[in-house]
Length: 394
Image (cartoon, rainbow, N blue to C red; front, side, top):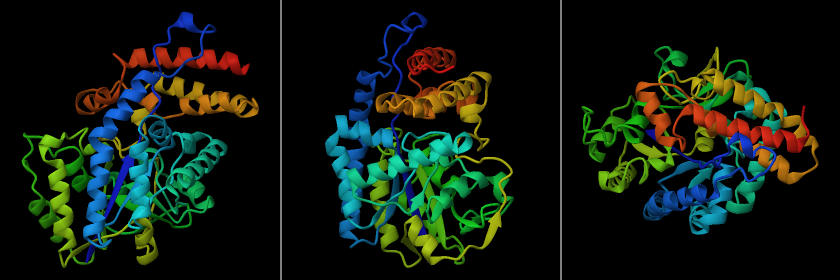
């Protein structure tokens, strides 16, 4: 029996409004709330509400046999609470079902684990509080921003009391090994890792509506047949993707909702497949061996590294400028200024500055609200300079 481990990422950033150089020192309204509200409401209507209803029905008609997991960023929770409370309540309904696990992450979807352990710990604490307040859950599993993982990240997650960490099953990490097994993190006392099967995950998340793909159209019986054909000794398969896949990245008229509904029903009725959450896997299965991470691995782009966020000079300069303000923000004694600075740590801000081309560049441009990476850089750096002056930072 192979367990399907579905994991869905839910995230919305606070996007920065146009902030020209001459605005420095004269205004401090950094966030484009009109755009942020519009996106939150649109995605709630197209994805969160209909898909949450669909998953809840799947749980109910299968008597809890269907199971899945989510990570909802703190910035997404705050936006839904403000602008789409019915969507946030529908996530609470999933949590109350007992069949859906909500994992922890950083409250601001940040890169703090790479450079600022103090801030990482603080944001994890914030996220735990948000999950308790809005969803009534106390998380036991962890998913770092964009699955960015190495031994240092795993040690920090372990020290904070979590039981398991999600990671990308990258080829350069596995060297021919299967992603469908429970591994430990070398350099972090074998802390358990559940890996993403990127081929099968991307068949749904990226290739589903690609008419040029040899697997198009992807039908649920075909996909489930692939899962059922996995060797018997494979204890699970990790299918991790953006939740906005359903209805936003892949529109309803592609058949993505019907595919998911049928796929779940076929798996529930299979004698070779079942469903499990990350914590259920780590409490059930033994670690088979440790993996060594020579550098941070993520689920982004072909490189599966951190170049999506730190791959060029603009990104690295902005990243350095953001975290340089951390000590002053934490010492300010002003919770509003601290919260504002923390929203600048959201990884999307440097992601929009990526200058990658070809396929990965198309993905970056799809998510960016800016006309160019350079525009993103200037806008964020101008807003940061204003915040630096307000903090009195050197």
